[in-house]
Length: 91
Image (cartoon, rainbow, N blue to C red):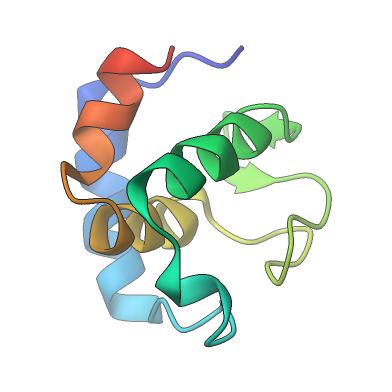
């Protein structure tokens, strides 16, 4: 499991807004919370470069090298309790 600091989460969310978060297709955008939680479990297993804040292999529609903040922003927009909750509760 990966540990993310609140500062990294905030920094990456701000960066993601600048890059855009339209990396997921329309079908995946309509997941309910339990499906997003399961998806989060998959995301937590993806190898991650802590220094550069990027994923090290493809994760669904996001390619190797995608900034973590872009993906976290998607979770923030698609989970009713937001990504901060996922970080706290699904560690």
